[in-house]
Amino acid sequence: MKTIHILNGPNLNLLGRRQPDIYGHETLADVETACEKLAHSLGLSIVFRQSNHEGELVDWIHTAREEAVGIVMNPAAYTHTSVAILDALNAFEGPVMEVHISNVHKRESFRHHSYVSLRADGVIAGCGTEGYLLALRRLATLVAD
Ligand code: DQA
Image (cartoon, rainbow, N blue to C red):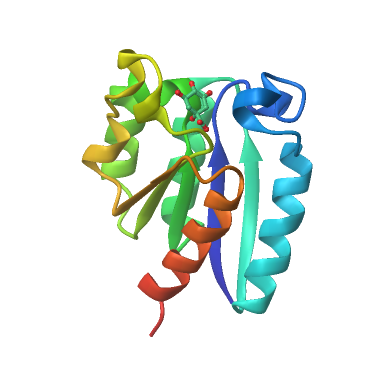
């Protein structure tokens, strides 16, 4: 079975409790459950991870090189700062979907630039946690035989 790695950056462990007016009331565990369910119906398996540490996210992208056919990533604040995550994604051969729960373009100007978008095959922002499901569907199309 093809495996998709879903990687989440800093502070997303607080999803549901952190600024719910912006990020909603669903927890990251709820998002993982919804992704598991959809992936199963698409004939895919997922690995779902979250870290507050840039280097750990870089290591997990390296792991994805060996184990995953595609990556869904919400790099959170590292989106706007991390050349290291961009470089790691550039070393990954499969498709990459970038997800943001909020519409970053409607927010502060420092959120308008994304290093990850220089690599991503698609970007979903402002669709709430449903964005993860939209990204998974798109990856299912991109990795289909
Ligand atoms: C985010 C948007 C980022 O600007 C922010 O730093 C996050 C979450 C989102 O999902 O909307 O932590 O990636």
